Length: 157
Image 1 (cartoon, rainbow, N blue to C red):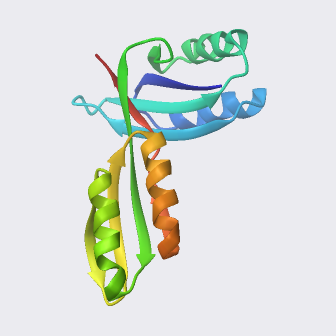
Image 2 (image 1 turned 90 degrees about the horizontal axis):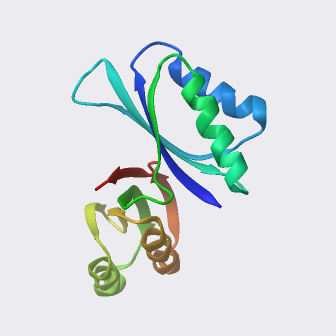
């Protein structure tokens, strides 16, 4: 099962490397990772999606993270009310006669064409991972040429 965990850390050199090393040494996989400064530039907010087969593994991950000196807090969003989003940029090829169909798909989701040149469009979408997955399935008919996506971001209520 995938779990979304946020970690508030001191914004110092090597913190991310130590966190990644902790996961690597124990054979845990980070499926998604997003890191940015908070309102206080001395503190960063790290959000990761991790694979944890059971509750014991998840608890071990949280305990190991809390042991790191630069970690301020660890929050597991698994059982908390929260929202999460992911941003994607997708490059698709389409013809003039497919433009209406493409626009219909974009209107179905929280997506918009942010650039188009000739027969290539770059589409931006921000939504929950499941909706992003469905959008990509719908866009596949046009031929996805390139895809870039952020890691998941999340915030509790």
